[in-house]
Every structure is written in structure tokens, then in C-alpha cells.
Length: 361
Image (cartoon, rainbow, N blue to C red; front, side, top):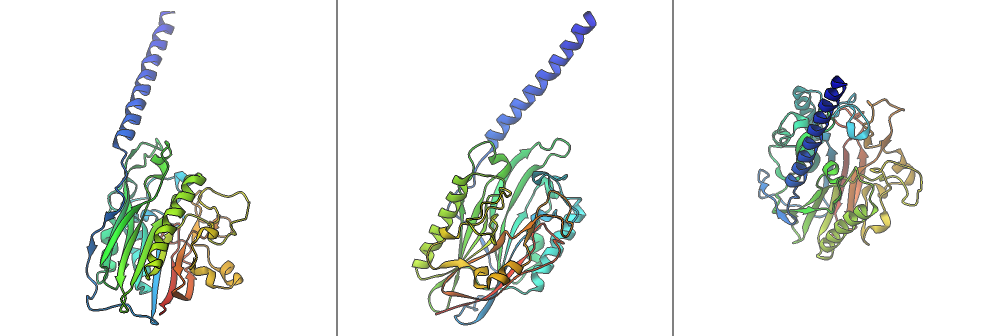
């Protein structure tokens, strides 16, 4: 009897300690949670030729690529998608993957490169500063970094805690960027905010020789929420800002990871992942459309899917794939060509999207 009481006492003490630790951890999460301020002016690192200017009727190119914090080799699966891992395989793997992604982008010689999910100092990517690697690939470009989030230490999964994350959006421009601003998307205010974290887009301005501005919006929309209110709020905020720029007479290009199925019709009622809802094109303001919508319907459907599900390693024909990445353009921009680049998801769970375009009069 005494032995049983002693066992129950020990169990009770252990349970009490676990509960106390859990309470302290939850307090830590809430105490350390913060959102980066809205309308934050961003530093532009100037390396592009100062005397070059954009002009109308000349062909330019833009490429967008979510590099998945350097973790997603084709055999990588991510715990938040139902896979195994919460960290990249190794520091060497991160270095090789980010370098490979940077060299791939540079090989297309884009005038503008929009790169998402770039880690600065994160547990999951072994504290590699991925932005520095990419800057070496684009040493002669102006560059701007908009930090998406600086999260608290996530002690989950217990076998390999995801840890702290600092990550964001990098823009590289061959033409001088005069100004850049970070806007904070509306995000969840419930406990799920510790998993989906902060979200933002950047607004960067490049002069055109006719007195107007070429305004680049770079974004990475929410992924792991299923709130219609948040989705609608993010799209409303984004489109209102784009419309203001168009009404001011500027050229507007918006690119990045939309975390919506960009090929699907918005009236499609099929069951789908929370990060793959059809993008509601009806919510786009007048004068705006997706670059891919300049293609024929068959050409659009034939585009390589720009992202794979990371619930498993990539197996062609078996892994779920979808197009989440792309560009929105205003109607004073002509889409000359549009391509989803097929690398077989070599460096990320995403593949790049490449577009050539002209600024019209």
C-alpha cells in the first residue's frame, strides 16, 4: 500500500512539473509574441548602376521564387504539412541548397528577382544567413529585405523543436530602387498565430523615364490558416494598395507566393488544402490581372505546377502539386512571355516563375 502511494505521489509530482512547465512556456509564447510594425520604411542597399532607368516599350524580366528556407531538397518533408522534419537536413545542405537556388535564379538573368522565405537566423536552417548568400549572387543589384517574422522558440515537435525563426522577403533589382515600405498583412489573433506567424508584403519603387514609377509588390500570404476572414482581409488590403498606385499613374507588378491555387476557378467547390484555395479573381480591382491569364486556357493549364505538398518526399505523379506562385500586373504592363520553371523541386518545395514584360505608354 505504501509503495502504491509513493508511486502515485511521484506520478503526481511529475505531472505537476509538466503542467507548470507548460504554463510557463505558454506565458513565454504570449509575452514574447510581437508583430513587426506596419508601414515600416525599409533600407535599400544600392549596388545597381545609378544612371540606368526604366523606359517604356523595352522588354524586362521578373522572376519569383520561394526557396523554402533552404530545407526542401526533393526528399524533404515538413511536419506542418504532415511530414517528418522540422529542420533542414544539415547546415551543409542549407548552404548548398540556397547557393543552388541563387545560382539558378541568376542564370535567368532577371531584371527583378523576388525571393521568399529567406532565413536570417533560424533554428530550422542552422542559423545560416541566407540573405547574405543571395546577395553574393546578385552583387550588382539593388536589394531590399522585408522581414516577415521574428518568432518565439516553438518547442514543437518535441523530437526536434522548430525553434526560433527569422525570415522574410528579398527583392533584387538591376535598376535603382528609390524607396521601399513594409506592410503588415492581417493575420490570426488566435493560438494559431504561433504556427502561421507574421505576414507582410513590401512595396518598392523604381523610377521610369516618363516620370512615372514602376512599383513592385512582393508578398508571401498566409498558409496554415483556414479563416475566410483573414484571407479576405489580406486580399482586400493588398488590392487597395495596388489600386492606389495605379490611380497615381504608376505601373504595378505584384509577385510572390500567394498560397492560393492560381489555376483553379474561384467557383470550384472541391475539397482542398487550406493553403490551396482558388484565388478569388473577382476581388482584383479593375485594370489588374494575373500574368498567366494572358495565356490561352490550354497554355495556362499546361504550366508546370510551381509548388508541391511537403507531406512526403517528392514522387513524380504521386505527390500533390499546385501553382501557388506568380504575378499580378496592371493593364499598363504587357506580358510578353510567362513560364513556370520545372526543376523537379530541386532546391525547394516551390519552383520559380519567370515572366517577360513591357511597360506601355
